[in-house]
Structures are given as structure tokens and as C-alpha cells.
Amino acid sequence: MNSILILNASPLILLGKADLLRIVGPLADFWIIPESVVAEVERKRSIGQYIAELEISSKTSQESIDEINPHVAAWDLGQGESEVLSLALQKGVGAKVVLDDLQARKCAKLFDIGLIGSVGLLVMAKRLGVIDAVKPEINKLREVGLRVDPDFLATIYQKISE
Image (cartoon, rainbow, N blue to C red):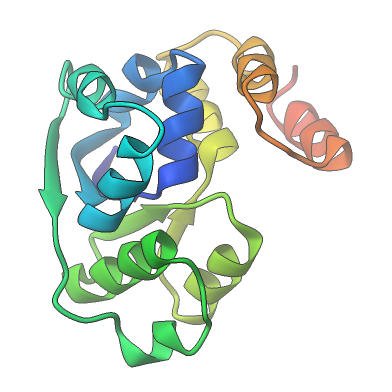
């Protein structure tokens, strides 16, 4: 299990829409949602239900950040991604980020920030015995808007024997 996962808006929204937050909730002891991510989610719907689903099995916190790390700011990412990455740098080794955006993922890798995406959370859930199969859950994510390379999915399915 990961002790701290810092969520970006797109994974939170997609997992919420696909009714998968209860599945991924137990994968962290603590979920952090930056204030700009809260604001982004709130523009589309209330974040309360999403938080309630995560809190069934874990703790959550909404956190603000005083300043975006200048090295992260140089990447010119969205506000949510920038706050997620900056918080991870502040928290240190125990924190991982949950990002699906390609540029934000590249930035995380450059700064050696622990990283997982929506698909990775589902694979982790299977490995920990939270779910029996990943494919139906990924199909739910795709139905609500996750765009993912079919070749990438084929590789994942092969690695997890689905």
C-alpha cells in the first residue's frame, strides 16, 4: 500500500464517474487533493461524493500550496498538475502522484516523483486482491472518457494475464 497519494483532477473525475473510487480508496493510507484540483472538480460537480467514497477506507485532505515549485512551473502545466507535483516535492519520498496527463507524467519522472495513473491504480487493486479483473474496470473508465492507447492496454493485459 502507498502511504500518501496526491490526486489530480482527471483521475479523480474519471474514477468517480466510473464508480471506482471505492475500489482504489484502500490503496493509500492518505489521499491529498490540492485546492486547485478541488476547484477544477467543483466546476463540473460537487467533490463531496468523491471524497466520501475515498474516505470509506482511507483518510483524505484538501491542501493548499503557497507557491508552485519554480522547476515545475517551468513546465507550464495546468494549475492542478503543478500543485500536485509541487506538493509531492514538498512531501518527499513517501508521496506519489496520481496523474494521467502525459506532460505532467514526464515532469514527475524527471524529478523522480513516484507516479501512478488511473490504469495503474486498477492494476494495483488487482495485485492486492481488491478486484478480480482489471479489464472490466478499465472499460468503465473508457466509457466515461479515459483516452488510452490500445497497444498500452494490450501490454498491460498481457502482463496481468487478462
